[in-house]
Length: 121
Image 1: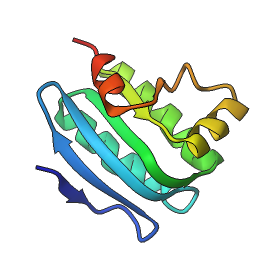
Image 2: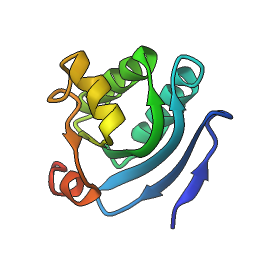
Image 3: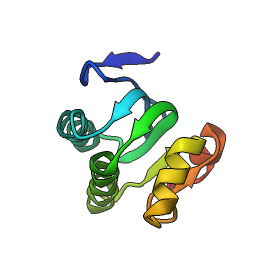
């Protein structure tokens, strides 16, 4: 059952722990204002386990350079903890990520099912 995860006024999330991964569904703005809280809360959840993470950004409104930086740091954090990070994207997020050529590093996926299939076993 998804539980609300309090982030900021402009960024909201739900959190679920499933078999071997955690699922975060985000809505709102992942930007300079919300990035620090987002990073801190997600790193805490990663440390608690499971280490594989799916970020569903399919309904997010906006990601800026600070948000992209936070996503890069989360990928590194999950890798350091022998996990993985999959991102379910939308057209706006994909376009922003492709501008800075991070689409492979950030493991962008089109659907939640595709993200689940790509989780480390």
